[in-house]
Length: 117
Length: 114
Image (cartoon, rainbow over all chains, first blue to last red; front, top):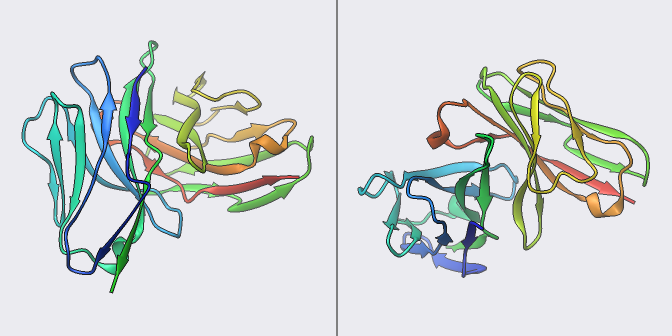
C-alpha cells in the first residue's frame, strides 16, 4: 500500500520567518509524482508545488521549495518569508496508479499552518 | 477563466433522499474525479473517469454513483444518502496525458445528511 504521512498536525510560524513541513511516503514504484496542496479557510484546494521522482533537482516556486530525498522517501515543503496569507492546511500528496491506467492522488492527513504577525 | 465548477456549495438533506452534486470543467480535460474530505483522513477518491462513458471506482465508492455522458460534466449521485456520507466533496480534473500536473479542484460541496 502507498501511504503518505505528515507527522506535524499543527505548526505555527511568525511572519517573515521560514518554516518546513514534513512529509514521508511509502511506495515500491520507481517513477511517481509528489505534490503539495494548500487549503486556506476558503477550502479551495490550491496546488503549491510538484516534484517528479525522476528529477533530482528540487522544485521551487517563488517562496516555496521542496527537499526531495528519494532514498529516504521524504518530501518536505519549505516556506520562506512566511506571509499571513500562507495560513492554511497543507496536504502532501502522492500520485498513485491503479492497475487499469487510472490514477488517484493519495493524500496525507494534513498540517495546519498558522502564520502570526 | 479555467476552472472546475461544483454546485451546490452547501447542501443539507435527509437520510434516503436522492441527491446530485454537479461538476463541470471548461478546460477540455479528459480525466475527472470525485474526492471526499473528512477530518483526520485527508482526501480520498470516490470515483474517477478517464473519458466520456469511462468511469471506475476509486478507494471509497460505496453509496455513490457517477456518470460521464459529456466530457465537461461529471455529476456525483447519492441515491440513498446516509449520515456517514456527511463530508466535504471535491470534484477535480486534469488532462489525461499530463499526470505530473496534478489536478485542478472545484471549490467543494459541504454535504450534511441528517
